[in-house]
Image 1 (tube, rainbow, N blue to C red):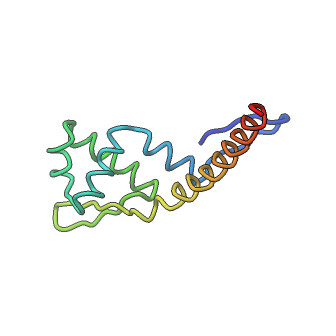
Image 2 (cartoon, rainbow, N blue to C red):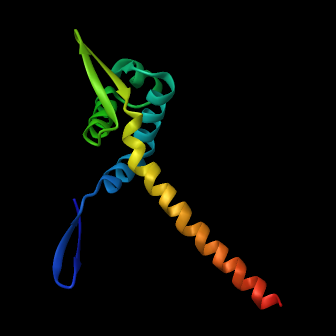
Length: 119
C-alpha cells in the first residue's frame, strides 16, 4: 500500500485507480492481459508458451492480475483457465474521461488567452 505524510498524518492511498495503474504498469502483465482480451480464455500453459518467461512467472503475474480484479480463473481438472474481466477497466475509463474533460477545458482557456494576446 502506498502511503504519504500530509500535515503529520499518515494517509493510505490504495484506491481502485492506484491498484489498476500499478498492476498494468508492468509490461509483462499488460501483455498477458491484452492477450486474454484479444484471444479469450487461455490456460496457463498456452500463456506461458507465448510469454517467453517461465510458468511460475506467468502464474505470479496472473495472480496479481486476479487480485486486481482484471482476470478470473476457472479450474478444469489439472488445468487452470484464465479470462479477462474487461469490465474491471471501467474505473480507468471513467478517470480518463474526467481527465480529458479537464484538459480540454484548460486548452480551450489557453487558446482564448492566446487569441486575446494576438489582438
